[in-house]
Amino acid sequence: MKNQFLEAGQIVNTHGIRGEVKIVPWCDSPEFLCSFSTLYLDGAPIKVRAARVHKGNVLAQLEGVDDVNAAMRLKNKVLHINRADVQLPEGRHFLADLVGLTVIDDDTGEIIGTLTEVLTPPAHEVYVVRGETKEYLIPAVDAFLRGTNVDEGWVRVHLIDGMGQEI
Image (tube, rainbow, N blue to C red):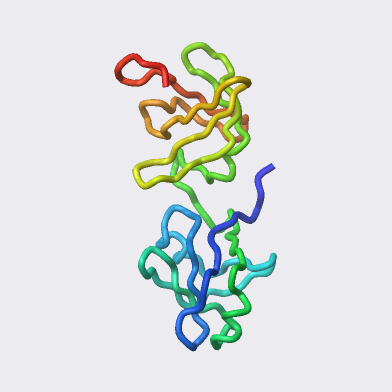
């Protein structure tokens, strides 16, 4: 079952004396997080009065957080988004929905393992897949991905790189 609320970032500090908080985004980009008018803190909605990108993070003014003392009380809190507030482009998925999917070799139909983690280095995402005896790191690019169906619980991959070598 898909979670309605997804982790989107963590408040790591205050900014200034008027209650702004500094958020490290855990989503596609800081700009994506800035697009929300409502975030969720401890399960409760909190309105975003203003948000802007600053050095790869988000500086946000949250409703009811009007001074540095109120902002300081939020330090280390995790913010969530409501998946209903997001319309993903065709073929895109929330990373949280990919973890736990069965990974299948598209060429043989053999089950390779379970997608246990999605790494997000700068170039592209990398799927960590744990099989019975082996762990695979599969680049999440067209050359290796053949299809994903979150509702049915699978990812199909091609394990041979462009030079004929198994990854």
